[in-house]
Image (tube, rainbow, N blue to C red):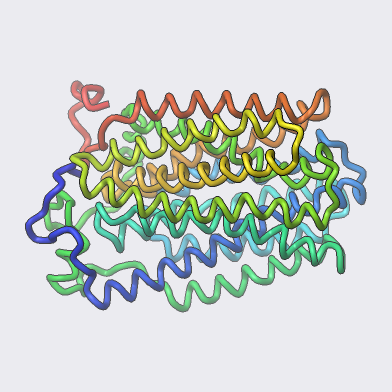
Length: 446
């Protein structure tokens, strides 16, 4: 991969050929829909948190463990899933993942105790693991290098949109029926989306493309024109030889940790610490994530504008991540300390706006920093680091809140995010080459 900003065969701003444009539209629509369902399923437990704790007799510490069960399996599965997406393609892997996670979500509605619920959430994490590595590979497959920020922002926007819709939609189901129905209904919705995905999405077949279509997709890429062999384990493992990989892994740990404090505990925080009713919490908790939806879209659009004018797609997208993460830290501090619920929600809204801007820029960074055949692999490694942080966030937050309050829990999360921003800034400096250098020179590129 090269950072040359110009490509005479594909001037910036040139529109996609009609068949490519249709594939882009279908792909992004399906990624957005599946991503919304993905986050509706994740958020069901957070929305129904107080009722589930009362029904199953769980402590705050146990609920923190339950909230994190999904995240541990999700994080650990990122490492093999990224390589599998690069080897067999996103169509099959994401489709199978949709089926598995939907069945696991429905099974959560049948949980009779803590242990059974933990197993269902672990399976949910395994099933959901292919979603974002697959999305990154789809964008890499169907969009040229310097135009990947906006589509990345669109698929990443599913995260705050699904999280915003969860309290609005699921609170009504929980209050009107029972919390178990919320799990069953969202599980059934996921199975429908799986059928649509298999019916409509296709991985690209370059042998059937015209010369103009290939030239459009290959803009800014350093390609030999020969078919690429399937990703080997040695090539996947070789990613860990680069400081860029470690900077993205550590940096995303901090970003996702802070974001998942809000994703998993915001409804509970508003009811427990700020004494809001469940229905009022449903509305109040949705507002910050609607801001996050806007943040993801704007970050994708803005990073494309910067990248098209920059000599390095890597540095421009990295800088966007760092600035957004520092803003997350700055606004979390008053969110934790102010007495006014309105001011606290306003600060939290800014944090989640910036969190999703950072996330969209991080995934766009993966498509810029990785060679084409290892985009899903690098994105998944970054996501692995992020969701190690995401898995720890609800546990640490739950136990800190149980022993003290939510204030030190939020300040701890801000400190972790600050360290993550520094990791991006210091370690992520250049893209990873397509071909591994000789052993003696490996770390010269790191």
